[in-house]
Image 1 (cartoon, rainbow, N blue to C red):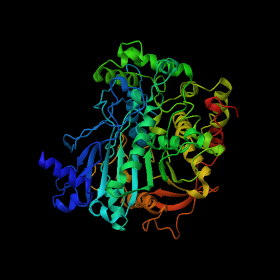
Image 2: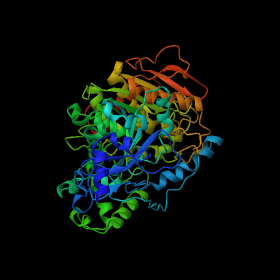
Image 3: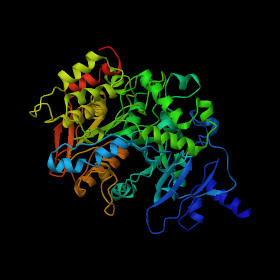
Image 4: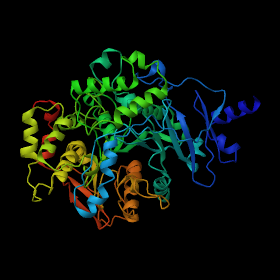
Length: 560
């Protein structure tokens, strides 16, 4: 008991923990719980890692499908858990089958025949008690908290299509943070988990009528961001300099926070880096109801009340099965959905209307071929129309016809950006789900935006994550597609952009070879092209009538 009291005293005294404990594992007192930096052997000399800090109570039992609540007080033991913790996962089997064939397609140009029959679930690891975050803080920052200086905070919100991923899935951030250290501009890094799939994004009229809360995954993110506002000063962080960054669904989530409440809800951060900001078109009422019933069917219950009484194992299996066995873009499609409060319209619509957090600064980005690994392989015009009908469930027949005949006509001479049906569907999905989100953000923020376009071959979705978290000892790509060796120059430039933006609001690197600082995106759409063949300033390739039309929201049932 005496030892515990001494540790609590050290933690309460802030930097005295490090001063009186020459060992490399300091303790910090958060009030509700006490945490000690985890043991990492010789992995790092510059950082303390506080792993699996609880930012909300376990969302289990009656707390399922409700807003996360504050953690319970638990001061009986000091927490120091280095284990990997993920929220329950679900992977679309059809997408795995397609992605596994893309390397062959890139080599030969022959569109593969991929069967989507007999799809099965892939049950992955995870646990419902998953609302944790990690904090990596430079030792020289944490050891001198008492001097009152504060450093910027970089917050990672992971992607994974709102059904997979975790705070640690994409590797260690140490090489990224070391780039900031080299310029003597340290930053603190935070990464967070949030509920996924049916646990975080279940919806439908029956779900709501039974007391289910929409967008609990997004609300989890806000809970974590509020935790940062309340606690990051204890680590030496400046709550007034918080930069969020994320890729795919992570960046898509950030866009929803930027436009939350039509711009009326504070985003809880100051800067944002949107890497391939992705989210799915909102589903029709019937599709959401179908997804709800499908999940309940897999769980073998008839109501949310019944589901709240089930074991975690039963619900995790139902979640994985509902996702894994679905045909391409058939129910369920889990992700943000309008709730009349946090989410009102598609962020592109809010951005075009000027309804967003204007005080922010952003970097907006996307890759040169975002759609290729996100769509089923198709060969015919009929299959193309079927895809549109499956993914745009709020669009009427005339809207579908306009997309197929005018926006993305069946012209395969390269003038439209594609030479076959597979490229056509990839271009369509890339624009509607990712590229045009990035364009809309750049145009909305104008002089307060910077941008980069990642075109290092093959430029597919998530390829740039190997650059964001570049580590010479890593094994490379985070996808099933062979994207080649990471170009170290491009990786270092990208890391400089990220850490420099968090520190100074600048997208700048000595390694990019540009003769002047990166200009704002503004109305001209100025971006930096990051390519292994060279780095240069370009005009955003996505500035087009196509993106202007997607920003109208017509495909989601809004009037033109």
